[in-house]
Amino acid sequence: MNNKKAQRIRLSLKWLVLVASLVFAANGSASIAPVNGKSTTTADHSKFKALQGPFDRAEDVTAACLTCHTEAGEQIRQTTHWTWLYEHDETGQTLGKSKVINSFCGMTITNEPRCTSCHVGYGWNDMREPPPQAENAVDCLVCHDTTGEYWKFPTLAGHPTYIPREWPKGSGKMVQPPDLERIARNVGASGRANCGSCHFHGGGADGVKHGDLDTSLINPPKSLDVHMSPDGLNFGCSDCHTTMGHAVSGSRYQANARDTLGIDVPGHTDFSRASCESCHGLAPHDKPKLNDHVDKLACQTCHIPAFARGGVPTKTWWDWSTAGRLDENGQPIKQLDDHGHPSYLSEKGDFRHGENVVPEYAWFDGTVKYTLAGDPLDIENPPVAINRVEGSPDNGESRIWPFKVMRGKQPFDTERQTLLATHVFGADDTSLWSNFSWEKALQAASDLSGMPYSGEFSFIETTMHWPITHMVAPAEQAVKCGSCHKAESRLAGLGGIYMPGHNGSVWLDRIGWLLVAATLFGVLVHAMARVVFSGRKDQ
Image (cartoon, rainbow, N blue to C red; front, side):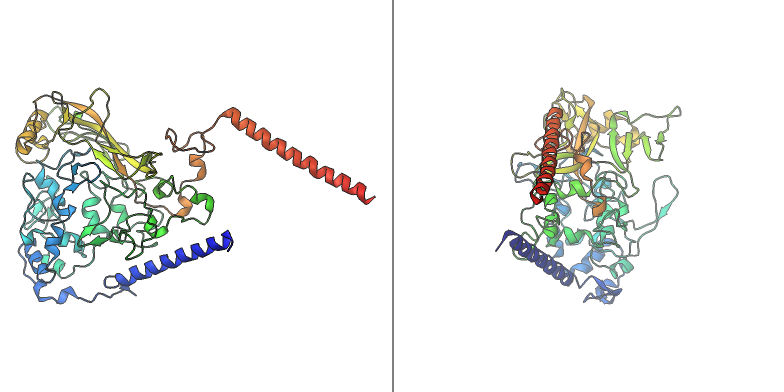
């Protein structure tokens, strides 16, 4: 069997496996997917007696859910979404939202009522303690509401409001309690809006944190994301971030940067589709030359030419050192940039935002190491890396990945030379957003969290890497060859890779072109000689 025939057979087998996987996925999700506009689910929740109510509180809905879904509460309480803890096998670090410091609002601890509004439960008011352990403390509705009417109020530690409340504060706009009975009778599979109710708003507002996650993905055009667009595949998050026992695959702490298992085959791989290769395989292109890039480049590097492309800006700079400045009347200041985005707030300091941002690139093997509270800083060589993506062109486990690199300034302990927890939220006189005093806010954060603080502080520049893996553009909008293979390459400064058109010597290029010209000249002379001597032979 020749090589071309064998290659065609292998390609055919891959397509058969892919088609079979898609058919299996379609059949496996038939209970939730509409057919001809009609639901094919085998259960109509609107007919369940337990869901008729009345429900005074959201926990009452959870209690009703658990009468049928008896194991769901315990499953949720074993997940990272519940514990906000992640034990990193590679680095030995204990991570998770309850442990890490980020480049946005600092730490969740001491800011619980605000930050825990995105906890998948109710009533986590003190993060020095584990989340509430009551069976009905799990929030089913935040993931399974299909009405779009359920909303965890931003300052109630995960609860919706049960009485009319003003939000935003001082706006005069009143938020009404949700109709829990109607919502309970209309639960269903999680969609993009469910996951996005928290993940799209990380960092305090729409699109702030990730760069590739914002509300434009709820109903995106195909030009923004070929997978999530209703005009494309109309994927929900769980189509890629597959679940087992409510544990969701895919991790920001330990990513699968180089999936060598290829197309996901039920029973033979890792049951996760949270990688491009799990659907597209290890040789996804028709042109072999493009497949030559796969061992060095992550798919996202070419297929996500820019992030924050949906009309929602992402924050790229946050300087906390300028927070607390007031106007001549002692009132908070708000300034906007030319695009109408906040550029200064007394509560938070200076900002910069960006749209259609070209990523930065780094070798990445999936491992991320964090600078945690208590870790010593190298203050002589800023910026401090809040997290460091591990990777090398030489370890055989890395690829070149795109990142959003968040930059800014954060408080640190000048005596202990460590990053500090910050108490920014709260109606008390010690929170930064109430008193605009860093001295009070940092001391309160230490007192409330138990983290040591010398009483002396300053600010230091920091960076934080966020992998870019959503907002996949159509193939025709992928990064062009000339974007990298030129002197001003996107990948300029990145070692461990040779790029024709970018790397090389001017004299070596000239010699090469001279050799090409000489070869062409020789071919032409040879052709002319054949013509001349062929004519003489005929004579």
